[in-house]
Amino acid sequence: MASTCKVHVINVAGKEVFEDEANSNALVEFTSTACTGTPEAPTATAGNLCIYIASLTNASALVSDTQIRKAGASTEETGASTIGAVFAPLATGTTAEGWGSWAVTAP
Image (cartoon, rainbow, N blue to C red):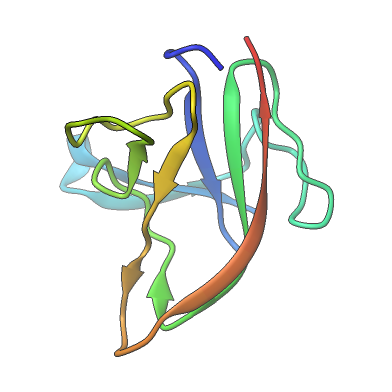
């Protein structure tokens, strides 16, 4: 996986979600063209890591730069590294849990 790999999170409704920093961090939800699979059959187009959320309890699937970090990085770099990515949804309760799947395709 190249360092230019783009990370996407697909919510339980099948939509990609992110915080639009240019628009007062408004939540934007749209149909992804990079991640067209499902939690049961995940897919990713070339150069993309797609995280499919099947279930979240007491957690938010909001995506922001602070929630997807390069795995193994010594800093808080966003994105994915050659060893993966760390996705940490915001807990909305005292305990949070979830499950899903992922797919990645090299550029």
